[in-house]
Length: 409
Image (tube, rainbow, N blue to C red; front, top):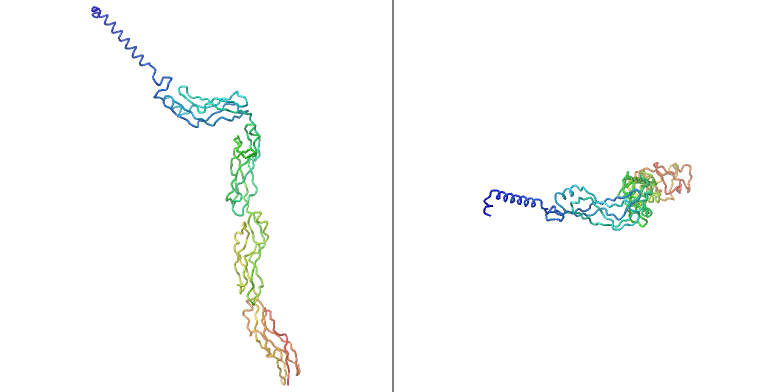
């Protein structure tokens, strides 16, 4: 044995054998499966949750519709970061339900599938679903308009004619759903409007006969509504209203407004009951002279008269005044004769004058002359007419039309 160790060839063989063993050991360690290569997850793997992942439906969509398929699902994924991160970032996969070849009817426990890399452990929640496949139906429906808060329009305004474009829509869904459709409508809010609704685009809503909203395919999804918002008006006579009595000595010659008619605005149901518009009542007891006064007009609720809230009223008064103790003159009596008034005894009388206040105010006793003509009368008692001279433009009413006198020598 000692001779072997002394042999150079023996040592060389042993060294070669050890080198081969070392090479094999290193190679085995290098190629041993790591945790990331194992079919079992290791502590170096990442886990991610993706929510609201959309679900696609693969089916003959020209002839069938499907219910029961969720719009989205949650996907749980686990794998090495180098593989998982690009999938999460790029979302280069899809989640789908393959219903190709399925017949109409109910189908239970249909699998939701995916195209996620097989190097990633992916779980979908929910994994299986129950679906209903129905034959597709298509039908055209008229669109109605529901105007909201019509009573909330600006005061005096009301809804007039309106138009919907297009007036019909095409609805596609399961035939059973099409048969349940009760009404197709759009909503337009009129709150506070005082002008036309001009081409407002609004979404189409579909309901069954019980008023429940239906999820269907509507074409077009929106329609355009135009509506006239009217402010109707009506022209009616204006009447001046008064109360009370004028002060003593005055009478009303005329009272009139500066306008004869008023244009009143309001909704049609308000205007149809308006035949005339009145001023507020003018208190005559406070009027002592002709002139112009301002008065408001009175309108029923819901009516207005822009620019005519206050009007001018012209008042013309007639004044009646009595001037007392005016003397009655005599003329034409002979030189040898004398006359004595028997009635009125004192040869005086009163006169009442009436006319416009402007004319009457300036009249005095000096503006009148009362006289009797005694020419040709012989002694004795006589009734003689009284002549009156006075201002024009006023009515003169003497207290007596004739006087009784006695003529003596």
